[in-house]
Image (cartoon, rainbow, N blue to C red; front, top):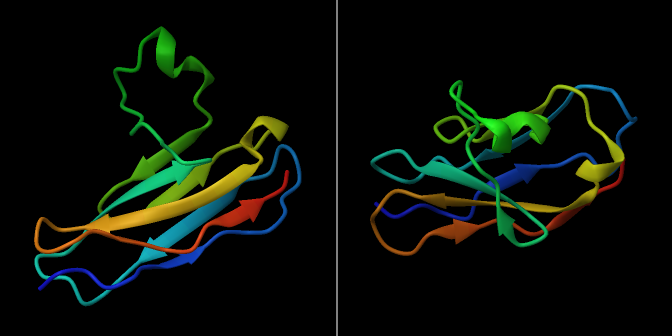
Amino acid sequence: VPPTTPVCEVPSSAMTGTVVELSCKENEGSPPSRYQWYKNGVALLEKTATGGARATNVTYSMNKKSGTLLFNTVTRNDTGEYFCEASNGIGLSQKCAVKQMQV
């Protein structure tokens, strides 16, 4: 079963230095969907434990299975337009509406 349009929870504003969690979920897809978050139209990288120099400025962790995007400490650099995409390899992937987060 292809995924339906996911529901995205993105706070419209957040205080610098706080913990912020964005979530994305859809329940129709079978097999269960995997989720990819985008910021300003660019796919966010899934941070791994073996992150080298490239990952040092990454302030978030993304869980593609649960659809969460967690910022341990948000900075002004995290301000932007976020959306997520659900896909399970069947049919077309589905995106939620873009939401602005102001830090």
